[in-house]
Every structure is written in C-alpha cells, then in structure tokens.
Length: 177
Length: 313
Image (cartoon, rainbow over all chains, first blue to last red; front, side):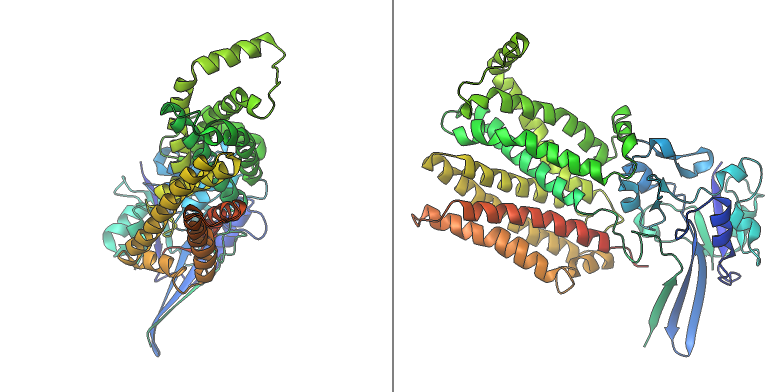
C-alpha cells in the first residue's frame, strides 16, 4: 500500500478551503498551516500563465526528515505516510531543516508538526479533510498500488509532475498539469 | 521580459519567508565542540607520540578547560531543543543515518573521557590536589597507568567530534549551501586551528608556542584552500548551489564572511604568527583571540546563511 495524492492544477482556483479545513480538522495553532496555496505566474506579458497549487508535506518515499531524525520520532506509517510521534520528538529542528519543501514547523508546544494525510480519518475509511471539502473536487487521494483508486486513475489519464524531484525525495503528492 | 512570480499563502513562524529555526545555540555549540575536539586531538596525539614532556601545554594544561567547554556547548544544545523534557529520547536509539544521533552519542562518550583526562592532570594547576576518596585515588592510578590507551580512545572520538560538526550541516540536501562534503574537513580544520590557538595560550614554553604557531599557520592554509575549493565546487554545480555561493560573492553575507572570517579570523592571525616566527614580538593573545573569533564567526555565518539558501521555488 502506498498512499498518494494527485492535485489538479487546472481545476484548483486557490480558494484556500483546504487550508481552513485542515486547520479545523487538525487543531492547527493560529498563525500556522499544514497545507497552503501557491500561485505561480509565469511568462511574458500579455501571455501569462498561472498555476495554482495546494501544497503540503509530500510524504516522500525517500524522506530526508525521517533520515535526519535522531530519535525515530519522524517515521513512516503503514502506506508510506510520514508522521511525527509527539512524545518521541525532542524539538531539535533537524527534520525542519532537512525538508526541501519547508513543510514542517515547530508547534508552539515544542514538538514538530506537519500534514499527516489525515491518518486518523483514513483509518476510518474517510478521505483527508482537504480532499473532502475541496469545492472544485480537484484533489484525489488513494493507494498507488490499487489501479482502481482515484489517484491511480488520474495519474494514468493525465500528465503530472512532482515538486523538486531533483532533490531525490520521491514525493507522493502529484500535480496534474 | 519573461517573469516568474511566486506567491505563497504560507507564513509559518521561523519557516517563512526563509528558514530561521536554528539560532545562536547551534553555531556556538559547533564552535565549542570543534574547539574541544581540537584540544583533545593534540593532547592525545602528543601523548601517543611520547612527547608529553615536550608539549606540556597541549597534553596537560589546555585540556583542563575541555570539560567546561563541552558542558557549555551541551547547555546550548539543550536550550535549542523545543521539546526539552523529552531530550532523553536521544539515548533510547542510535540512528545511523542521522548526524544528530551520532553527535549525541559521541558527546556521551567524549564528555566523561575529557573529564577523566582533565582530572589526571589537575595537579598541573593544583599541585597539592587530593581526591579524598580511595575509589577516586585508585581510579586515577588506573587511568594514569593506561594513559596511552585512553589517549587512543580520545583521539578517535575527537576526530569524530570535529568532523561531525561539519557533517551535521552537510547532510542536509535541502540547504544547498550546507550540502557540500567540504564542510566536514573545513570544520575539523577550523576546530584544530582553534585548539592550537588555545594551546598557545596555555603553553609556558617558547618552543611549544612556536611549534603550535607553525601548526596553526599550516591549518589556516588548509582552511583557505578548502574555502576556495568549496566555492569552486558550488560555482561548477547546479543553479541552487551557484545561488548559495552568491550569498558570499556579492550577496548579503559577502562582507561578513570575507572580513570577519577570512581576513580577521585567518589571514591576519596567520601573518602575526608568521611574524612571531621571524622574531618579531607579537603579544600572544592577539592571534589567539583572532583565530577563535574567526572560528566562531565561520560557524555563525554558515549556520545563518545556510538557512537562507534553498531550492528554486
């Protein structure tokens, strides 16, 4: 089982519903976010192109945060989801520094926090909160090893990219382009 | 003109607009760790070479400060932790891929070893020292009898300590400025240079001071060579690494790095030490303080600049 997410950059309108849903679902402290929206404008005026991406932890297959963690607090859960065990985390910041996506932050309570793909919801058979609320239905979540999952079907049908693949992290969040 | 404008909705404290998660604690510790490694390296090396009586400053006097240096460094590391009460989790596992884990275990080994080394040389400063309890007296006798073995163990751990302070940074490929294997040898050399400087300060004999001034000049030469190679490597690499190098070649850290680290911390003390060898009278404190200052600044600047360097987007 390999959990992954595919996000359609052609359908995303950058409304930030995913950000708010995550903050509510996961009790993210005020002023912090586990997911965020990036808007890239590219080209020569007037031929400009805009790409909107909802970004989060990429749950990398070769995660530098897991490698750099001295206590094993950062680890892979079943399905390759990268999570942090709060009471094993010493708050040294090594994982924060090691993430090329800057997807982690230091929680005001001291431990390091980040997107969990809403592991607690997945375990109940639900979708991650961000996927659930998206008004344009531009996010797809599922198991890459299951050819019938939403994410596998989208990746078969569409062109896609990952973020900073040259960092060698093998991200599990795909952007449909 | 073709433009790419990136707007991110993320504004996490200490992460955006650029990383600022490691503050003064880490570079201070890296300096103190490197300094301790340098002093212990020379102390154990000259013991192994059987030149203990020739280099009293290196073997018996300077190492007395090492436990204090390490404990202050450990204190800084502890203050850096944000989930402090869980620090003991470091010692429930050993993670071979995590330099932080290597460092934690190396410190666990070298701190008591440095205390033992300082303890068996305490009479250098307090000739009438008595350990009061028989157990301690016996322990001291045992350590003195096996001093060469102790020196071999300390030599091994001092090199790991010196190199790991650089590897801690270079293992992070997310920060292009740090992601160069030159940082390991550069920090080791800088630590040895700082150690040699402290030994010069503690040494009472002119012959020993001259020996360590020569060693220090050589180490500074190696450092300059490594710095040049570091920039050559960056400039011949990918765009992110060229950007990282540019932080020091015209970017915000240019003046800080070249003035404080290279000129004040390396070239001036090397010239002063050279003049000393040519029989000019230079107050010993000046090159020593400059070398220590340069060594500290090197770590501060690399630590802060590294957190500014990032991947393209």
